[in-house]
Image (tube, helix red, strand yellow):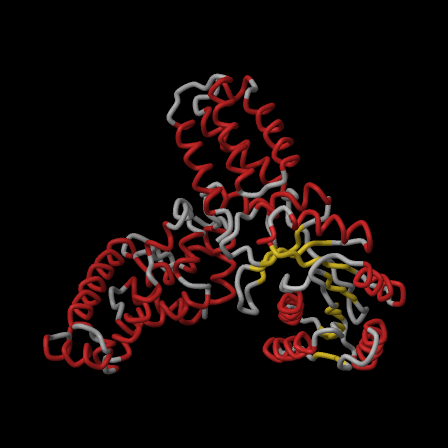
Length: 461
């Protein structure tokens, strides 16, 4: 995930601050010097860093901070608020036109930014919202781009209009709009061609489309791994064709993430979405406050809740919670909980959103996804009776299961032991809660606690 190095460095700075009973201006200066270096190393624009440090310092050396009983915590709070402000303050959503009015979105960006995939991801999101989107393939220079759009469109269940590479992009866009009018599509997403760098031909083509068609939103797709270049790219597109919003891709990759902290401030264009993976569902609304919390290692529980609600089967979550309360948790439940967790992006991704577990590669160290695959194989090697009655496990059964899963019997013994320990922990935690408020003992406990999370969000306990 982007920001891991920045997150680790900032948390170390704040750990030292929290250890001090009182803060002097010199303490703040030393801490902010380290924060400044961490931001620059994360590839944040140097002008943005300067403004940010000045804003934090001005607030941090105020009398209310210096005389606070917890000055270190107050400084962290200020940094969190300033990071949030830097990235836009609050989430900005696209206001789609009501009813069957046509919302026309033109996607722009350089080649390799993930524009075509992002167009399909966006179309899928709008379809889930009850809209009738249509994808229009206007990249006439790369036949592979049109084919990719068709494949991804089919995966998200959204039709794709294309006329190959023998027509001008503006003609294809106009024909796509005509088709949308005839077939009552109300969100038209135009995927345009990119180049390796900003050039005159690309800009003229985009200007021609906007000159012929009443584009509602022009969205710029920017690869977060381009670092400070992302800011220059965004500024260039904004100046020439006008940009209404930015979508940052590859924020899940091995990138320093500085573009997310720079683009909004330099261009004054909001970041609307963040691409967090290669799957077509991996497009998240960009929440500045949640991103700031993740950077500072405070977790992102709200996003975790939303992922859970989108991915989890309510009936299965109820079943897991009920079994946990009654201490009837089985290997079948364990398998189900792992499969549900995969839908949320994997256990490591979930742990990164939990407060205190986002630091560096901690979440990756906690959970080895390859080991989980072997656990899955072991459980699949059990008979249905064994999965639903863990007490049946004996040496001969374990030997048979190990052979069926292609693992050493020691791994089967380890799984059975861990399962028993987890079940005991869940019994202690789950027994204390009311109905639907099970604890978080391991994977199954987390899944069983879904309703508890919802209650917490709704302020019910």
